[in-house]
Length: 266
Image (cartoon, rainbow, N blue to C red; front, side, top):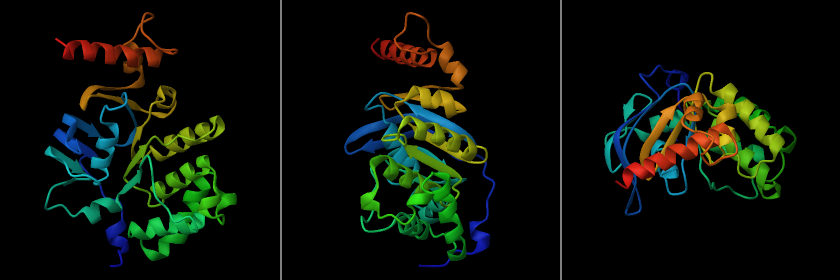
């Protein structure tokens, strides 16, 4: 594997972190993302939508796991197409999918080190970066434990550790709080707020309260289309007392989906 120089790994300024125009992405034969326009930059962006809305497919496209079926996608200033240098783009990404693989006999430290190596981090930087990622996810005491011995919540935090180990410019987290207990979710929100100061973070979740607590803005998808993008206050303003939900944000979310479905049915 080619060694990445310090100059190549240095931070770069981009016009935007993520920019999509009329983006279309398929999940199998199904068009799961259909004509999406989206621009994201520094901050923590919450991605909401019902099951089948296209959230995971969008995250996979932004992680360069699947190729767009149409439209235009630009990541870190580079258009993702047949000519794109995906290895270079991926050095600036961090990604936690809903399900991630690992070698059960690896220790947690070995797992995060291996992921740092796959991301082509400079060799000299890996030990310190691995320790920081483990510490930031509250797993310091488990660094020497084998992956197969970790609980579900710990495995999820290990997945977050590998996603942030390279200090990515774009961090993509798909359902990151699954398996976390309430205290761990509070710690995770603190981590998101800290990372989002100088990183573009996109968090896909079903938990509206996590979005309200940690995100600077909210994106709502339904059937592969953009329903709403705005601040948390904008989301809350969409709902009223008669809408479904236990909180103002949930009522705003349900009101947006109800109106979108009504318009689509016309």
